Image 1 (tube, rainbow, N blue to C red):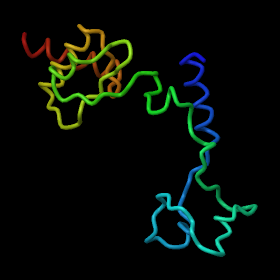
Image 2: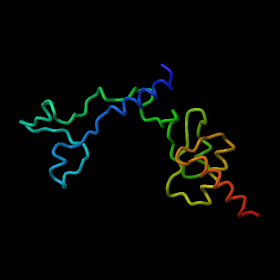
Image 3: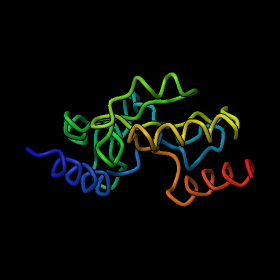
Image 4: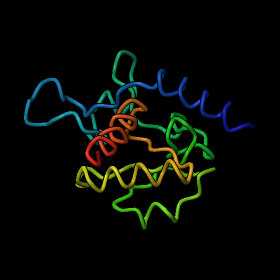
Length: 140
């Protein structure tokens, strides 16, 4: 199966997948919504009775080749500096600039990524152009 088709399938599966929430999350504020498996002897959620929330099962899992990939089909790699950017493969990997990176270094990373043909996953095209223009204006 082609990668594009599997990514589309994963997207459709994700839309149908229920929000898995902890049993009784709506009753007690202290519980929170993060998933915990229902273990009670009389638990109707564990017994999967009609009208009860769905529980996590293997059938909801996405196709293995596209599991963990960015929606664009690229592998997500966290980048902190230009040296880490140089190690990436532009065909299969995309860069995600870490939140702790300053504006000066971010401009350098964006510039080098353009030269290498690497896609930056956590930045829009407008933001990238804005950073590159900001760098040109500051030099003039």
